[in-house]
Length: 434
Picture: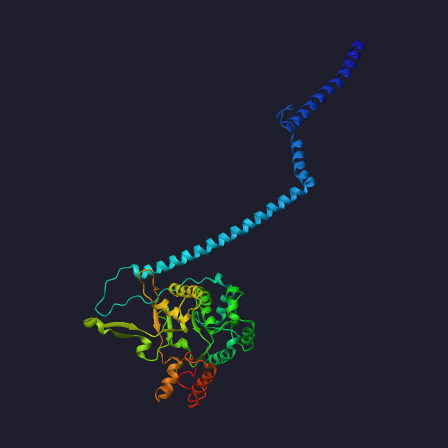
């Protein structure tokens, strides 16, 4: 029995390693199965490449072209990039244009809404003599994107969105000095010189005069630097547009003007344009019924006409309204198409010509300034200096517009009204000697 027991023990010992090996083989098989299940989810012989292979392939794709790109291909890519940049610039330009159109549309919509609020609502007519129509157009929406640099200057110089503006080049330097000296003496802070050349810009800065020099513009600079009075005068209609677009009311002033009081204290602000007149009495300044006589017509020989002397385009107050900007555009457009035309004549024609067949008139409100307060030199030298009572009046400004010897007459005006020299105006003739 002892022998049988020993043999059985030996068999058990011989079978134990073999069982362990089987268990190990099963464990290894299960592990390999898990590994293959992860690496080959679609089967060992599937047409899909292994994950590792796909990852390597993608890396090869990314690295391959950059390492073996041909010069021709590189040049082609550069050309494509340049083309895309140009297209992008063109698209940006179109976006800017569309944005401007949208702004104008919104501005027009706002204007239309304001007009509707005033005009669209129906009203009953009040008692006799009490009805008043609309006289004041709403101002435009300020747009600082038009000229950010000018907008910044105006914020510092203008008062209550109002400013005196004069254009000047080196040809009028002496008159400009009398002009801004008189403004300083009165104590007017809100004025600005638009310098048309570098010399005037430096001259203004050296005299602590607010100055603005426009960015280079070939269409304007050639006239601005060497042009005479009339040529430079025509530029103001183009330059003033930016001031109005920025939302500022402008008192446009030539430099042959002496300031004796602050003009903003005498502005009504109830019209699109307030202008001094070239008229010399109530009839010529404010209008009159002029009867035309044609005897050949018999019973109908008399024809009644309305007449008024022109507004002076060298001194007027203009509000930032749509009719005002339209006026500037009309005048500037005609002056560019009609180089021999006079800016003052065109200015008045666009203001006063009514609508008629083939022509749409400008619907702008107008006011004529008091000709004794905003005095032209014809009134001063033909009438005022010869009248003891009128000589005691102190005008707001005197515009030496009727005489070519401007500088000596400007100095004489200063002597008479500022320094009290009662004989300062006497040496000059009523009119010009040539």
